[in-house]
View 1: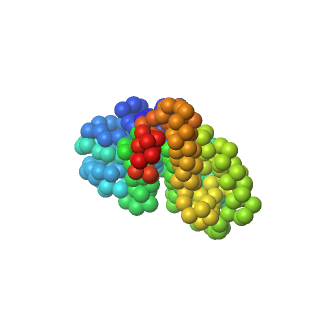
View 2 (view 1 turned 30 degrees about the vertical axis):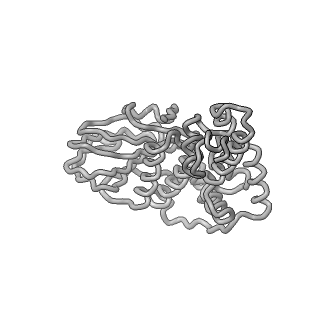
View 3 (view 1 turned 90 degrees about the vertical axis):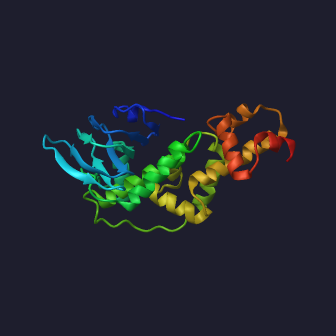
Length: 286
């Protein structure tokens, strides 16, 4: 399922699988040899799963460079850039888009109010961490009936921090390490999720409850609960859906939507994956 938002509309290739969140979005594409040009309205980073020789590209410049792209390479176009890329062969890639306001907010929280932005970079070197994030996004976009927005937003947050730490003027700024959530914040986030788990939630929403930066929140949440925020949220939705299914008063479609799932098929897929049962089997007590 593709969730298309305005934040991704500047990307001209409409055949991509894509998901948009408030802070940005991600796309996956497999294309034959072609050219691509646009004006980047947000920070735009591409991770390539395939290698290619004799690629020609430019970023905000009339000077075009020719180079080889290895599999796992990361290319970066800051907001406002006007990239042109000419590919001589088939390629598979994931593009990550982060809005300038979201990147600035990440930078301010990460670096005590200082604002940094990623610098332009051609895709000539492999970045294992970026490739890991891109692989997670590719799986979410291609292997699920509906992408999990909170999960995608978590990856975008970590990807943005990765760009700031390694490809901006903030590379050598040290961020303080944080431990687990305080008992007060554990109580606050439990109460917040218990009241809001059926709605759309972003990492920034959850981090704000605990008055932490998104990166620190993700790390502290995982340390406190032993799982990531999107996993905890999915657990709440599944528990709620199972109770309604056992009661048998509503249709599966109604239960899926009330529980925060995108559709009946999304609920069925998730229930089967985590519990080994379909909604019908659960109602029958199997």
